[in-house]
Image (cartoon, rainbow, N blue to C red; front, side, top):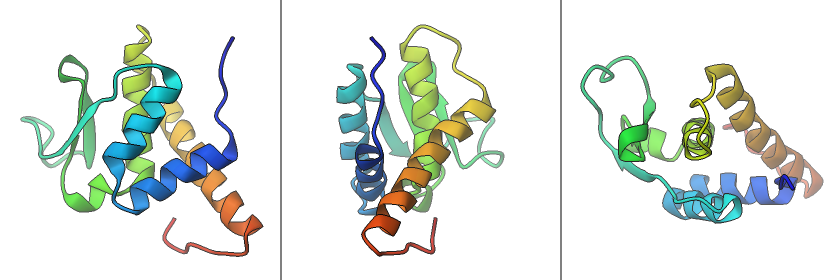
Length: 124
C-alpha cells in the first residue's frame, strides 16, 4: 500500500527547514518512508562547484549544499531529498522535472496551511 503525505505533514517539514532544523526534517521524512536519512552538509563536490546550488551524491548517501542559505531552502532540500528517495527505492534517481514537482508539492502545502491559519510567507 502506497503511503501519501498530507498537507499538514508537508507544511511541518517545510517549517522545520525554515526554522533551521533541516536534519530533523530529513529524519522525519525518512521515518515516514522507512528509509535511511541522507547526510546533509554545506560543501561542494568536484565538477559541481559553480553549476548547482545542491546535489545528491548517491554513492555517499549525502546532499551537498553550496552554502548555509541553501541548507535552509525548503524547495532545494526537498528537490534533493526526492533524488535520495528514488535511489533508495532502487529506481533511477528521478528526473529534474519530477524532483521539482515533488518539492513544489511541499511548498504548495505549506502555503495552503498558512492561508488556512491566516498567515503569509512572502519568501516562498
